[in-house]
Length: 168
Image (cartoon, rainbow, N blue to C red; front, side, top):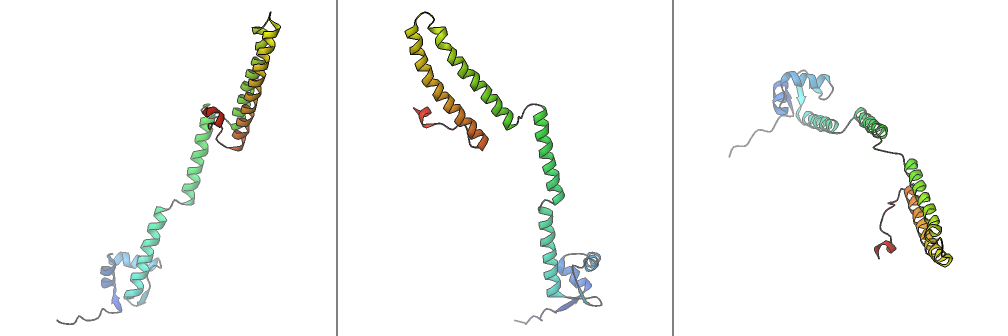
């Protein structure tokens, strides 16, 4: 077998362009951009230029893949506008507004329960007291549950996870 001649350390513009897979015009642009460095007039170091060109290609592909700061700002603005529109269309409400509505409704419900004994046991005082005792227990349970869920909403915890007593 014949021995191949060693690859030269430096090559001319045409050979370097061919090695990199670019035109001689693009090679000149890469030199002007500072990506590649000439060794001398029309002479390029093979190892240095291939390494520099590879680094350049990797860097540009990563830059193109990663969103720019302007794109991130644009995405954030879109999110803010979408939330604002959802609020304006009443598809989204603030947490405070939701908690206020929850507390108002639960308070009205508990007041409604308080009035039931007098309405149900008008003529029978003993029956009225029996109903009051039952409803007092339920009012306390519901009040505790409503308070617990309101606090969970404020803390950002899932407010409607099943309680142990709800599983029974």
